[in-house]
Image (cartoon, rainbow, N blue to C red):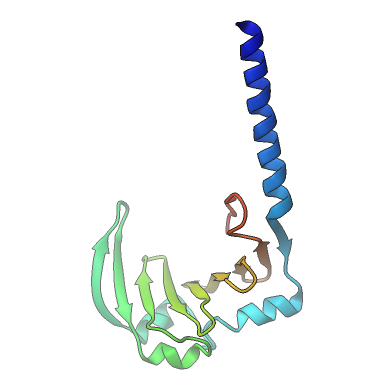
Length: 159
């Protein structure tokens, strides 16, 4: 009986290690080049002073909802569309008191999430279906997670 448990444990360990190695080979996280950073930065607001406060002055409150920690105020804005070159959908704007999120879709099916605080741009997160890549863009650098849907999910911390 002990031998069967040892063999079973060994098999489970081998499967776990093989799964980890497989996920590392398939999903690759790489730093962006300057050209890639500029490409994805074009999905951000072109507004010169894009801060949470400035963004909210161009919005109209449409509702709110309660989360476990706070009240999230929801907005709409036609004016912000002028500052998003690739937006092909309705804007979803949510104010979380310390930062505001703007979500939209592009013509080529990218879902864009932008976040701004009182200092300005915080980050952009998008999924590029043509490249099967999750993109994380911060103020001064970006990361691309390639083969995103073909691998075991991995948490990537922003910040």
